[in-house]
Image (cartoon, rainbow, N blue to C red):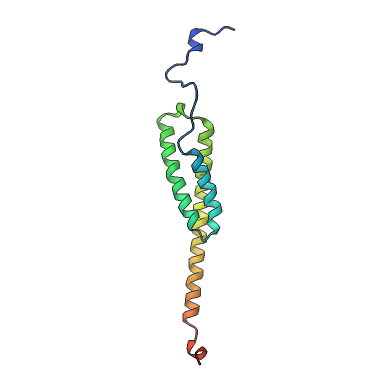
Length: 120
């Protein structure tokens, strides 16, 4: 088989190399950190999850504008990071609310103690 001139030369719509979606790797890393960070009272997980979701939305918008420009592997990384960020955000919210309720109960228990009996 011989290459015809139409097959050998790339067309303007088809780039010769596809590039990664902007911030696709950082979305994946932040999504994983949001799952791991949920056990530190939930605050690092919430922060990393929110940042990962905003970057994933920007990356998805860039991919939707020109899907042929970006590689499929970077899209899969970004989607995996987005899923990890959602899971991490949910877990972090649950852990944060649990810690908050524990502190409220602890505060209520401390303030309801009969301190005048201990001060003698």
